[in-house]
Every structure is written in C-alpha cells, then in structure tokens.
Length: 358
Image (cartoon, rainbow, N blue to C red):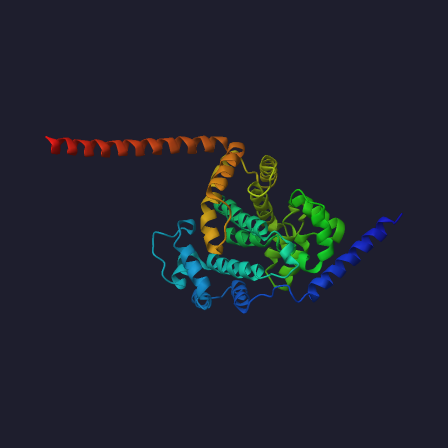
C-alpha cells in the first residue's frame, strides 16, 4: 500500500505535468491587445479617464454595448442621456466602465474557444452559470454598498474559466469525469481533484496568472469554491466570500434540485457574510433586475422570463418570505389601482356616449 508521502508526491507530479500541458497548449485563448491595455490602465493610479474612453472607442461594438449599459437604470443611468464613452466614464466611474469593457473582452475571448475538445462542454449551461454568478455578485455588492462591486462582478464571471482549460488539455480525464455524471458543481470539483489532483479553480488561477490579472482576481478565482481555506491575505476575505456565494446563488437557477440549492446558498450566506432574511429580498430583486440588462450586454439567452420569475418566487419563499408577502401585496394594490383607473375611463366613455344618444 503506497504511503501518504508517495501519494502526495504523485499528486504534485501530476499537477506539475498538467500545468506544463496548459502552458504548452496553443489553443488556449490569449488576451487581446485592447484587454491588456485596459488591464494596465486599471493598475495605473495616474491613468486618465479620457485615455480609457479613447481606448474603448477603438472597438465600436464594445462602445455601443457600454453606452447602452450606461443609459440603463441598472447602472443608474436614464436620468441623463449618455452619448459618449467619456461621458459614461465620468458618470459611472473609471472602475465600472473598465470592468464592463474587460467583461466584454473576456466573454468574447472565451466564447471563441470552439475546438473539438471544448465542444463537449454544455456551453449554454456554462455561460448561464457564469453570467448568473456575475449578476449575483454585483447584487450582493450593491446591497451592501461595497466599494468593490464591479471587481466582484468580473471575478464572479471568470471563476469557472478553468473548466474550459481542462477540456483543452485533459481530454481523457474530463471524459472520465463526465461519465461519472456529477450531480452538482461540488461533485465536479471533487471528481477533478480525484482524477487530476487539482480542480478548475486552481487551473483558472493559472490562466489568470498567464493573463497577468491583478492579484485580487487570482485569489478570488482560486478560493471561489473553498473560501474557508483562505488564510492570507485576509484583506481579500470579503471578496472571496461574495464570489463564492455568487456561484451558489447562480445554482438556484441552474441545479435541478432547487430546494437544496436554496438551502446551501442560505447556509453559506449566513455563515460567511451574515446575510439575514431581510437582506435576501433586496439581493434577489437586484439579481432579477440585472438579468435582462446583462443578457443584452452579452447577447445571450439566460432562460424564459416565466421560468426565471418562477424560480425567483420560489427562492423568495424560502429565503425572504416577508419580502415576498410585501411584493405580493404591492402587486395587488397596483392591480387594484389599474382596475379603478380603467373603470373611471370606461365610465367617462359611457357618459359621453349617453350624452350623444340623447
């Protein structure tokens, strides 16, 4: 029977081999020059808003999307018509616009991975979970007025990029893992560690390092599924906890066992971020508000409106019943007001007709 030391040594060797395969893989995406320049500007404290606006304006497709977001209520727009990227940067802030631009770059970068290996992935499911996670991360940050809301949004979007890399460089192992039919995301991580010695969060961190993403992104991706293991730097604990919870909220809309997914999100939210029932209502409302906006930004379908709203209702029933009752009462009041208005209009019309007849 092999000793624990020899087992650990074998795992280290397997990890090193996998990392070498990733580094040697030519089909993995490389950051575009535009994304690299934006990243560099984000790390430059003296970067000017005009320079960022000029850079983004070089990509018309990106510029159009960012202007649409800047004019949406989701990002606080709508009160003032935003007609230029420079105006958007001044209105929403350097960090917000830079992260929107980077999310656009990363989405199209990773979306372009169309090799026969990655075709085995359920891309619709992958992107639904990634985008739902990013929306959930922003919803949590917005509710708690975090200064790092936009950072969370992007980190949550990228937390599962290692899955795509593994399908590129560990084809047979991932085939074996798929054959095991993992029931949820946690099962997937455990099977990856069993057959590869690492999971996709570690692989995603290697990719983030290759792309020279800032340290906070690397840490958020690395501990996205194991936030309790983060020891240093402790400054990143809140970021890691929010990114981790964002994926569990996404699972409410992804996993077939919805009640179990809700219970897991509730337990993790309470233990890591002290999220109470009175917090869940606004968080889930922010989440629902963001779905059409972010889906439009990425030009992707996240599900039918009826299905998404039904799951939202189910989540509120378990996580924030008082908030759901309040929303229901508000809806009844609005329906009654609309009925009264229609009745008044009908009566006015009827009175006019009666006078004409006489």
